[in-house]
Image (cartoon, rainbow, N blue to C red; front, side, top):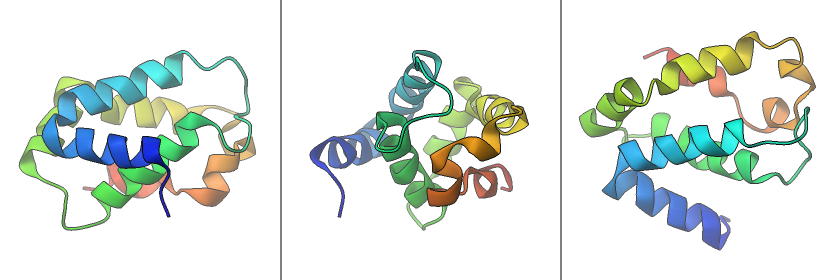
Length: 101
């Protein structure tokens, strides 16, 4: 079950994917700890993103938003970090399948 913030982010992804992905990038760059603590907002947003990318809800508009926001490059940077496997979101959410489109 999603939280209210996840439901709002899901709605944002459907209504304005570019803004939603830009928000994710902003939240990622604003993080203050590494690795991320369990329950971090970024983990919740990632869960919603993974649902969109792994379901039939993925739209051409979402893929175009990935290009506009350079979101795929952000994911590559995240996964290239030495501490990537130390983050709790790796065990919860597999971001790697997003880049295999």
